Length: 387
Length: 156
Image (cartoon, rainbow over all chains, first blue to last red):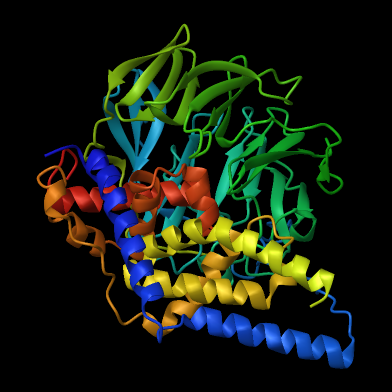
């Protein structure tokens, strides 16, 4: 039996053939007119009648459905602030040789340069799945984003203090990016059904119609980008990755549609005393699925398109984020998904294979990433106190 | 028919022929063959009804996917039907694969089929399903884990 990925590729052809057969059956049956065609014809008649009789110029609402937007933490205490939950005493946490954090299900684990899982650091709350994680610059805090496995309750950005083992739900944002100095955090508002249906807000105080928020973690000052200013098709915030410059003064957002992805560059006021503004400069020309800062600049994984399935790792000088950047490695046979720029080397995750090292424009396979160890430095708290 | 009307129809026809295969793949991946095909037709009917609003959209497939989901509620009691593996594909494809796919959640199945069976990129699949790439990855990982748990595999 072939590998699962290969079986699925072959099964794609089976699906295509079955869909064609179904369409042929539908078209060969005279009485079975598609309901869609009937509705379309009826709609056409209605439109024609309305236009002819009323002669009205139809106008479209300038207020497309707006998503619920993350509300910033206020400098005043919320009426029902997040309750930190404390469990066992803290233990030194960063294993020697760790080059990255990986997550699987509820677990966040450290991985070494050989692809071996070194230690499971965190187990998230039951019923939640980790979608992103990062060490803060102080190496005392892990930030991570989770979403509910049932997709019904709000996504959360959580910070776990490694010294005190206190977890705090920071925001009901879908994702986050920390500046390298740990002073600023970028929060990305979720645009999924769960967030909208569950009426997610970052605090209980108020709704806040922002797509992106950059917050100073020391002062609480923040700048935001109103959702109405974000150029989407009424679907809310960015659908692709976001990036914040090391100084926290520039953002890149990615918006993906079927013909590919486009990026936008945004300017954040240095003192966070105004809104986030679109930049006059162009963003990267990249179908980016990952954007990360590392040694030597910004790294981007460009997935290409299904018509041109070539994945590339690009690097951009931080002084010039426009254009295609420098292609460090490209592959048609390995689909790159994550880049890990470290002082120990440049690593990427790809499928098939797992962990690769980028070496003079070539991908050197290291091996698959281990499953996370079962023991956890910080087990999940027994009580859960969401916002 | 006015010139404007004809032009509108022509633009819609081009749009429909361009979008329909991708929309159908997304909805069939989500709901299975029968419901997905019906939902695609319904979504395209709505596309024509609301053509003036949909035409300028940056991501009409993502919007119509949501429409297809909404319109498919009437069919949801049916469990997803995935085509059986034809004899010509045995033993290359595990005959249990359709059943295992049907056992996944809709989101996981859609992520797995769009990315691995149809070769879409993760950003394309995320755009179609109206979720972020990180969410898509999540469903993809869970879906593959679920399949391996049924079919056997290294991380089952």
